[in-house]
Length: 589
Image (tube, rainbow, N blue to C red):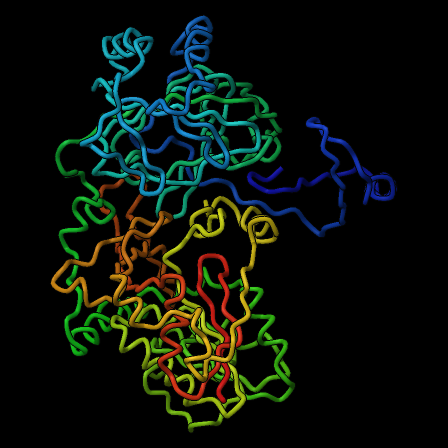
């Protein structure tokens, strides 16, 4: 049974036995241990392949102490948490989507993995914890007495996305006590190695140094964990030995996570991934078109040249609604993909004549390796005759332009390429990563396995597409419901309002707190030209490799329509929100 995969391999002694199993079980509906109906699917394979985990040691600085408390203390701690108390109590937090949470000492904010250091909660940590913490201090299991506690209760099937507790928020030592049920927690190094670690019931997880500052930790949402059959319920790494793996049914787990709030900036040994140290190198917001162009050159063009191969390796699944747009176009249409990246949309519809262009030579080279028609150019000056395209697409491009004027100019260039009646589809990253009570895939993504990603993307309950039909806004007076670009300037959304300020560096997989920001890219590898880069050095080293920062302007609701409204001879056919992006389909009239 390969780790983190939704299937197993079974070997039979004879062909007849295997055929009998196939005929008996394929398509059969069974009821699992949780009372849920499951359909079994079987298939014959030529051979079974799996990859052994390369690391057989815990991440540096990680320690798991078994049976740190007695079963009596466990019962006392679990009974001390009152999940039904008055919601006016400041320590109470309403249930998150997948778990119940309470905070003591300071409230932990999940949207940015931080605490408000100036607003301690009344009462401090529960009295019941004092004697336990004193004992751990005396026995040397912990070095600092915590002043913040988060209690999480996880039902089977729930988890928490992979994350690093913010460097500037907490001191080096973070400890977590597992109560009620064991769990497998996944630790991931930026270089790509994932280490699943068993945390037994009543065990204490201690994260310090590299495991606290550099490795992400998270819990995959599932109802069964893959565990070592021979080790029982002992702590340690779940190895890739497929002949020694079995499933363990999850129970209700309550974690007590203790932290000490940091009062001074972090000066750890990982400056390239440390928010205290990274922000010092932040760049300023541009005050002129020349500065904007220079910003884009350094924080967009040069970055994509450096990360092209790694970036391309993460961009292979076309987005369904873009595929739908391309497949609905008439056969023989000439379509331009402006900012085509690695060309993942250039081959979607073989009935179209598609050309692509991108500012990155290395990304265009990847397109050519796939035998696509692509060339290098700037999206503000595309060397294609006016009115020659039946359709254009611009996917995740316009948010890289650093001023409102340059973003409108990029839209104008798309319209110039279209023939009358031609359509353009535009996607930009949204400021609102949680919309209509649904979190975007960007916030939900935990990168544990591709199977899990596909499961999430196919879940219609979270893949909601919000569409509003737009009136013809060729005549601006006919669309009073669509805000104008001036409205965004009046509301403080205009980028000019933040001149002379530093661009903040975004914490990946969290909500946006600024429209203009730098988003980190942790370079994993560059397989081009036979080279391979291990970005964070050897495992256990203190020399993380390159982290690049890309400039983004994330769009607020209505902002893209308002920008389109400034154009002449267009009508907006459709405007919608799709998984953390604002999207517009416009037509040249």
